[in-house]
Length: 292
Image (cartoon, rainbow, N blue to C red; front, side, top):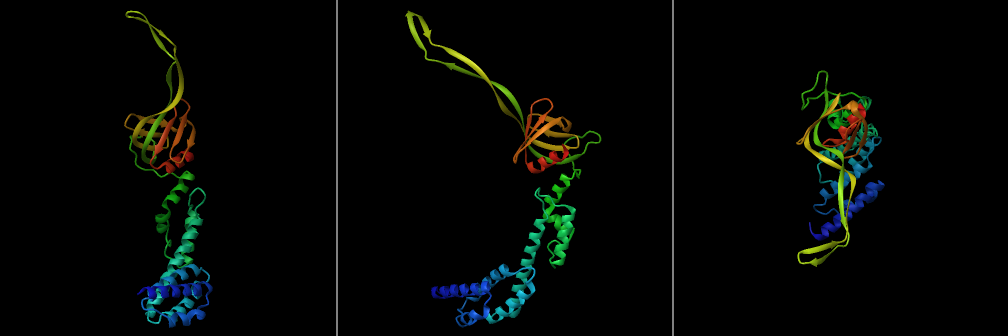
């Protein structure tokens, strides 16, 4: 298609968009058909799909599909009828899937949790919409597994997993990941200060220094990195094994926690706080909130 052909095709698409948006199909039909440029059909097909996606709603999908089909038959006489029907049918399916996805997302609460009732509502909505996207519990769990797990954690339903440590009797592991832990210590730093100084020679080999020098100290908090390693949460302890040392922090010893997006700080009833930076920080924080 030459430059003039592309310019004319752009005009067809513009007219077609106007027809779709205003739905005055007959008004522009003669112009589009009579001035059809060779090679323009593929571009116009794409425009039809775009317009169809924008216009379709659950209420008018069947009626709108029929109306578009009649429009396409007149507009694209050189295109096979079944191809047009498949084009519109595929668009209808995509549109319905989008509506089901939107509904499914409304079932997730502000804490990113999806309850069992929410799962059932998604399945029912998908079924009545004649959409196979989330027609079974397995499909919903595959798409929203993280949100379902978050709901279980928020409601203290903890699933047991294997541990990286030898656990005590009746101790169960609920969270398993990797990360780094630092011990926050208060350290004393010395600062030396010397004022203007001078050296006066009194005799051969003898001199006298003038001036002053002073020293002061102050305390600062410093995070001592204990290395990267395995981190587990059990029903009794937070277990950690890093490059420098291993830790077993009883949950009962934690009196406060500061939560951040990329870390949390554990304050104990005695001893220095620990700063935990875990690979799956969000899930780690959720377990601690639910268990303490």
